[in-house]
Image (tube, rainbow over the protein chains, first blue to last red):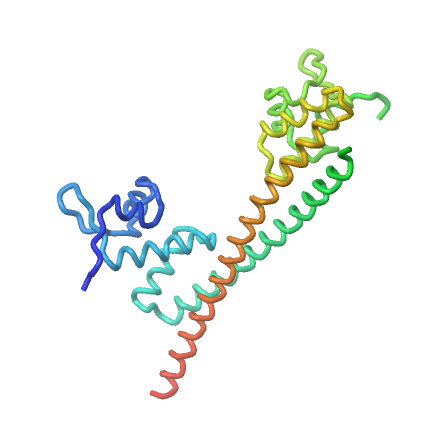
Length: 122
Length: 132
């Protein structure tokens, strides 16, 4: 069923991550590539999981949260798990929005500094 | 405050920083309080510099960038060079923040989408249950 078969190096390149990161995700069992001797190969499942892992990281989820999320995706999860995840996502959404508010404030302040500076330049 | 210098404690209270932070800036030679034995007395100059340091940090300026700005203050040109550099630095960091903001926007939109997907899954499951 697996159409894709990526080597360790190809996987790093595809997702723009360091070997260290990729090995770490394997170590904590978020990824489980096929091992052949000293080589590792990544199929559709691992690529899909990696996409979700990085997306979750971008949302600011912890790796533990992401593990839950992957379970929901793959087992289609129970309703309770899905509900738990939506709760989690909702909380994270609040945090991202808070971050954005904070960033907007800092940017306003910095724009003021810039404009004042420009005005004082003779 | 009767004297023009401040103790480390007064500095902490006034600027809402830790003693550790003040010692760090001193070690990096951004501040140079008068030392009396183990006591440190911070001058007006230190205070002015600390204000600049803290503001720069909030904007994401690196310590080296801040040091550079502080050094330019000593130049005898009515601070024109310092102002010009501050302006350039502000522009550069604003551009970075704008990129960061765009990323945040994208993450927020995507996360909302995921949540809607999840909610839809739950609704579908419930409909299935009701139908069964």
